[in-house]
Structure formats: C-alpha cells, structure tokens
Length: 48
Image (cartoon, rainbow, N blue to C red):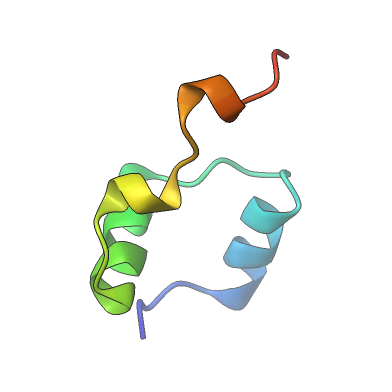
C-alpha cells in the first residue's frame, strides 16, 4: 500500500539500512497513525 519495496523494508527491519523520513510518512499514512508512533522514545534506545 505504501509503495515501498519488500526488499528495502526487509533491510530496514534487519538494521542493514536506515529508513527515510519520506518512507516513514508513507507507512504512517497507510497505517493511519502519527509518524511518532513508529519511532521508539529516546529513553528506550540503546547507546551505540
């Protein structure tokens, strides 16, 4: 629905590629949620 290739999404899910803001917006629109709901809170992130 978002027009994003499965291979691209697979790489993003495996942490091999960063997702663009534009693609986050596409996904959020399809899911009818705010972009912020797709991103974890800073406090939940691990340090590199």
